Image (cartoon, rainbow, N blue to C red; front, side, top):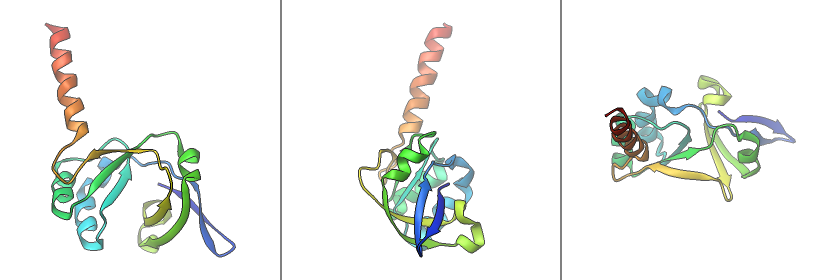
Length: 132
């Protein structure tokens, strides 16, 4: 959910905090396919439906750190496009950013791998061991 304002006729990103992604799960895959989106940035990961679409469209899910919106905004050097802003509102619109040294981690990929799933499985194993 970026905070974007127009200054001197150009879009400027003031905050680029990632939104909790799972709430977009019902819509993410079809939007990626329809609009040719290959990368999505959020926090908290997505579910199996999005993972399937990432394989289908050759995309990735980037995980950004929550609470660092201003730091992330400083890495956006240009807003190259915006789509569906009127329909969805600015925070939910599809923004195209040009970024440099943007601090994200690929946590879901086009090969069907999910770091979120791996962490959950490992956590469950460790919890079981602690409970035994």
